[in-house]
Every structure is written in structure tokens, then in C-alpha cells.
Image (cartoon, rainbow, N blue to C red):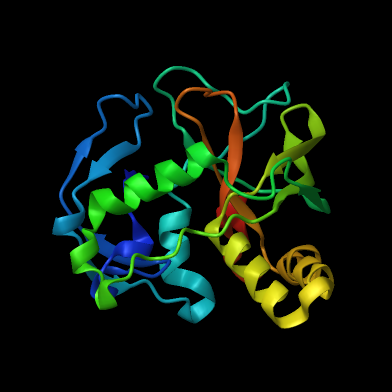
Length: 237
């Protein structure tokens, strides 16, 4: 696994805006200030989009890569492991989803400091004169809610209850789509996706921790292949 940054996705040319499950080719170097073993810096100007990994045949192509990701087998604590140079990206297989928790953010908009940082990041990668039509891109909208999965996870000593925040970009995109289509009624279709639709699939969490606070873990990506056929179910045992 590789954690690649910085990638100013909204500012990339259309030909460089890769899709989920798409291979890319780029020059990277190990991040010097981030000691997590998977963390690498990416040179955006070298980024090239390559082939897309298909979901055909019950996700066979994708599963061939997923089974190589380290799995968190569970420990006797409520925290995922955080030991120096150990893996900081792992797969979690929830035993059962208990609830999707939606919590209002303490601040509904960016602070002045956060807005300034966003503007600086935009300026770093795109000169104003290069932006189409001479207009700077709008500042990324802040989602006014935080989303958490509460779930059961099987550990070496039995079933444990966990709660982890979801920071997958797809969650933010779905929130804004539901808000656009349903207005104040956005929550019902949003919950239906995460509490029902994904529960009908073999939901997995790709979890990652923070560089500065390595005992804090988040769900950085939701992975949801179809329920496996009997002949492939043993891959996950």
C-alpha cells in the first residue's frame, strides 16, 4: 500500500483526474517528515492515468489486490495498533454494522485560518492566470457533519464494539448529492446507502492513522465487493 500526497485533485487537468480503482504512474519519494512506512510524496507533474481495474466477475481483479492488504485481526484494546514503523493502512472486516452516527460539526464553515490554508494550497498548484476563464476555483465546501460507523468486530478474545470516523471522499460527495436532490430530507436516502445498501454487500474498511497521533484511526475508504461465492469465501477466513 502507498499513501500518496499532495494531490490537489480539484485543480488537476481533466486528463489527470484519475478514478477510484484506476492505476496511475508517477514519480514518488518517501516522505521525510512522515515516518509511516506507506507515506510517499508525489510529483503531480509526472502523474499519468493508466488502466482501470474492473469490477467484472465478482470483483476478481480487485480481490486479487485486496487480499494482499494487511488485515487487522483485533487486539484487547479499543485502539488499533500503533508501533513505530508498523503498517498504518489496514483492512478491517466488520462483523456487523450497528449504526451510522451523524454528528453536527462544532463549526459549520471553515475558520479564517482554514480558508487561508485552502487558498494557499490552490495558489501553490495553479497560478491564477492559468485558470480557465481567469476565475479562481471556488473553495471546497465544508460538510457540516461528521459521520461515524459503530460496528462489531471479531477479535482474538471475542466480539468488540468499535466506533470510527469515516473520512472517505465518497461520503462527502454523497452528502452533497443527497442535499441537492432532497434538501432538508437528505438524511433518509443518505442513511439508506450506508445502513442498508452497503450492508447487503461484503463491506470492508480501509483504515489509516494520523502521522502525529498514530493511535487515532479513521476509515479512509469504504470497500464493498459483492457477497462472495462459496468457492471464494475462504479468502477472507
